[in-house]
Length: 443
Ligand code: GDP
Image 1: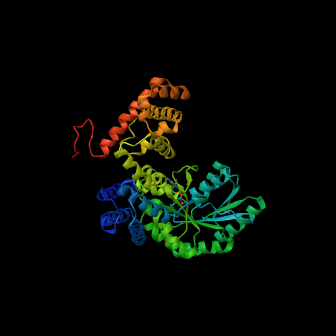
Image 2: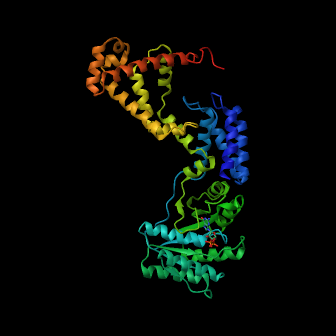
């Protein structure tokens, strides 16, 4: 389903291709596509409307960054807004100064509450925090057994009073037990219903009042899509959640829930469930979820890096130098360092669609060549770097450079002749001539 959203957004990008400035008029189609895609992914209508409005405001008047296509830049704007809507950063779990930290779990039946309770206890154990799980679902005997079984599996104690006791009383005594045991955190699992019903909400509110939790986590099945908005709204109105756990993201799930929960409640999604096993819990990272929704994470990284590194004024000067064949070794090394700042050449090339096919061996070879060239250029004098033609005509200079960097004289000669060839090729290309293709304007 995430793929479907990415696909429909992609058709919006296509419409932006070739534009040099992002304007309100040329993004209307793309915005419509974003809206349609999010709605079809079951994001709440109001959330979608606000989202699209924000994107439009952000995108208008954005200058197109040199070296970045406007459609890619638009993706970045949509991406940033997705991240913002989902909460910017990962929010950690409450850790109260007065022990124990009390976590109340809430959610519909089948959402994955009991499983999430155990997952959370295991997560805490890995962080060297101790936990006690409390079973208050007296309506389904199987639920208590399930928690006890999970507790044994992960070696975390479970407190229960069977099915005859009152959930509020169980919760209260559970907290007392946690104090007695001296554990850091107590996680109270509660009863769910297939649908929101008033009795469940009242009981939950009573449990909350009795135990004053530090954290109330709403467990939401990501597969319920549009319904996630209603569920979030109801639970938040009645008991005031402090966060959410989005489950079953390993399945064929729609993106809507992730976006809606945060936008409706204003509370962060803290974890995601990615499988039935107790280990299958991960912290929620808005960036990752946004990339997953867009399905184009690597392109985004590339745009981000280009925006950080590319100096527009520099680019204009460079073009001028290329046209006048004044591109020298200083420019060459600057470009090379720019590439390096953007990560490994191999990593960089792999981000470009269609370039991922280069083998690791080929990429490594390219990187080695660049390293070798850099060593030779470093052995040149300032004068030589600024005037590569000096080197073409003076063998003694080439000999000195070879000695300085430890490569052979023929290596140095090869670098110079390749550089000269590259310079003239770049000059021709910048003027619209494509060497080896019969010259003249392309297309
Ligand atoms: P509860 O009624 O809310 O307590 O839900 P349960 O914890 O009993 O979970 C309901 C079903 O969903 C069980 O079969 C779980 O194994 C399954 N489940 C829970 N979390 C996940 C998850 O993240 N991924 C998958 N695939 N299944 C999950």
